[in-house]
Amino acid sequence: MDKLTKIVEVAVTSDGDPIPVGLMSAEQALELPEDIEILVSHPDHEAGATDIFISKDELAGHVTSAES
Image (tube, rainbow, N blue to C red; front, side):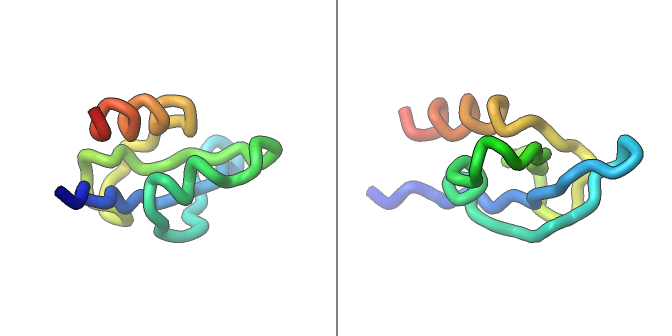
């Protein structure tokens, strides 16, 4: 069975506000280099349309639990 690929919005912060960088799969976001501090939109909400952002570590937990 194919798993549903979650699309997230990736953002960096400027003056405490998320600045959108682009849309990508959750797996691609997790593969970004560790030296880039990012926020990602919550995978349970529509990418690009939500104000709910989580850390890369939190995203990893969501992707891992979705694969189980």
